[in-house]
Length: 599
Image (tube, rainbow, N blue to C red; front, side, top):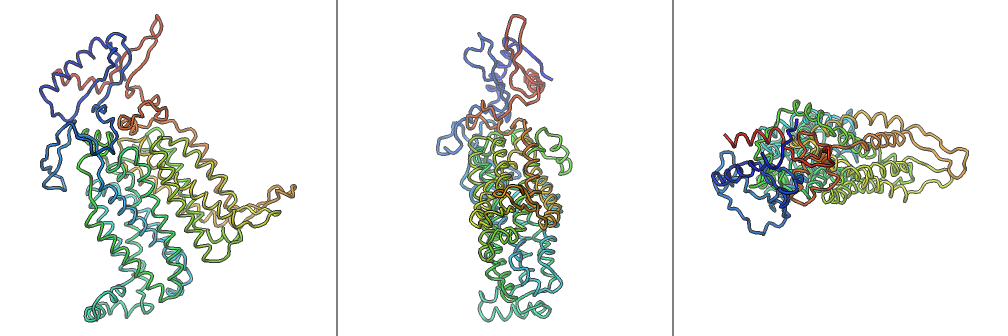
């Protein structure tokens, strides 16, 4: 509900009250400020009514060398990690970014890489794994990992809310390191130690060697336990990139940083194919391969424990500053889920995210069949093509995500990516009888598909956070990861069955007569339905609106200001009996704040 008032009455009084309030109490933590134009008193033109005065934040956040106009008082905060030099945040605080954000992004990306490397570590050498552990398949181990991942996604939001980002990431990294050691044993430490220490280590781990299946392998029970621990840790690296971006990065960096952190797990899959395919060619090599993974995980975990931080001294954007000043507290996960699905526009980026992750997962799972059918039969070439597909996903996210950061064109970019996905996925399962196999075109389509379908995930992760602002970023991404992984798990067996079926098209035309695989028909159908559904997106970009003063995009049409509920619109235009007349609007919340000032 909106109360309509004339500028010359309450708004004039409000200006006087605000001036008096600023004089009496210059360090209050929130303010309600009007920003009329110089001619508004005579023309009654509509003007934005702003909360938390974002006008002062219009400078580019990257210009951190500019002197601040307000002194930041150095005091100790009760919950601060910096006991000595915590900064008091109030209405005079300027949003600022810090170089530490790149260290944060580096460690979260490396942890995501390692988690998927471990998940798919035996995907490139399933026969070697089954030889080492008879009766157990590589596919079943991956399934156990993924199901543990989905279950853990339900715990991430509440854990991060209770313990903070720093403790949660450090705890998950430590859990993953323990899982790696269980999978590899401690044999990899021997070559790094002096002879006496190595002898002592061997004696303390004799129980493992006595029950191992080979000279350098631990029992399958240890492999299983370690896989479960890593699967439980992975969601903390998958569900927190939007939160990391919001907490540490400026408004025009968030989509890019989310793309890097969210898609770096694809590099882990590529690493599994390249390194695993080269090392795990024998049982002995498989044990050494697991040891290499443990060493890499231990190094990244040590760096995380030493350098990863919770949050910067001051927020990086106006939207984060506003959340801090308003004291936003997020509800438990299941309550957040209900709130998210009740938010207009949330389900459309969710559908796009699920579509993207399903297509990339299915193509990655059946990359061998796709390449062999297209005429690429050499295993090393197949591994290279698979690695190229995963790298293309990351590069596409960085390039296209950077464009979205600058323009906020979430809708048009997503639709373009989905349309490109439809056309690029077709050659992966299409055989033209007249032309025959064309390996070059097949690989080109595969790389193009990675560039087009991959960026849809981070872009729509950011879009979902944007439309649901000020909701919990971790809860948003947890919902998307749960949905994407569950739908992928359901579609993989369906796609596997359809891949054995061919459908002939254009049989009456010799030049166009072709066969298309059933799994490709499935993926094209998913992409087309998602395109149609997402094209109806028309929700306001709430977080971008809160940040628009930072980068001067307040008037951009893609912000969808007109879709805001009436009570949240910043100004209202009405037609009077004598033509057009513009009157100012003030929301109930703003009126309440004014009355409190009067009291």
